[in-house]
Length: 251
Length: 130
Image (cartoon, rainbow over all chains, first blue to last red; front, side, top):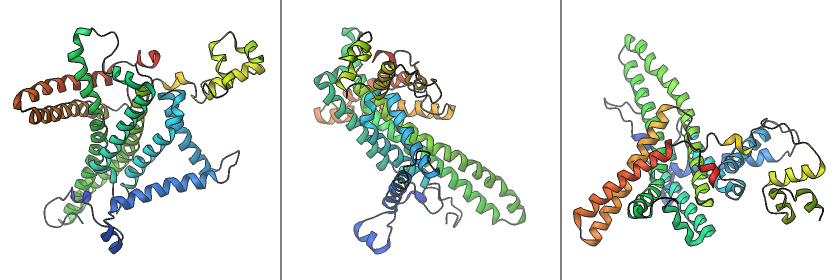
């Protein structure tokens, strides 16, 4: 579907199209929305089906659900402290939404909704607004002391405060761009090498033998992309926890 | 009143009187002290807070050089982009076209370096001081 003609169409995979036929077209329901719904449904199904047996010795599905729960809970309490339990639902939802986006995108005929900066920046904005609201609610006006580290010489305040404010405001950008760039880069690489395979295979017998090279590379890349998919969801959730830690324990 | 007898020597023993204060671990250890039950062998699950502090600030990525490099680049550029955007907006608002843009460009560079420093600096002080 990519190698019609001679050009390599590596970015066409990120184009939004309407899903669900006529219904989707009339309410502007794209395949990104569809995969968001699918991802949420999968997580919900794992949790509901896993929690149903309530066995003391968990079965496989229950062990998976408990593993998911405890993994995020441990991240929250380790990074934020005992108060981290309060933010557990937020971090849990965020992590699994991003993870499902990254993982579902690796399946054929699927769509990676985390490869859109609109999605990742929306998530990052949600994180930063939440962190700011939490911090203001806990510390009130003392929140603004965050922008001036204690012990710094007062004379440097006109320099330090703008730098700290810019650094604070750059957080959502770096958070979203990191996830988005990782996803786009991985999928473009996969697409480019997959196109090489098709192009070379179309060039006769020698080409078919030569096509084994990019094919093998793509197999390796898929494994690498699985790692990146998990790692980026983990980094996203971990940085959210670190920001929440900063918000709860102001300096 | 029996709790005062047991937990009076440690500040951690005070919160169980309020029953909701303190984390689960605090209340559990207080209850264990009260009953004279030894805690389970520590470190088996890594549930102790000290076990999880090593990956806290230093390397959220898996430790691969590509991830660290990408993070550093993103941190540098994003601070610069935000600062330039602020400078541009303030300039068009206040009508001081080049000057605030230049000022915020420099500040953005400094903020980017501060971001990177925060990323790579050893996490010695941050978890402890709170």
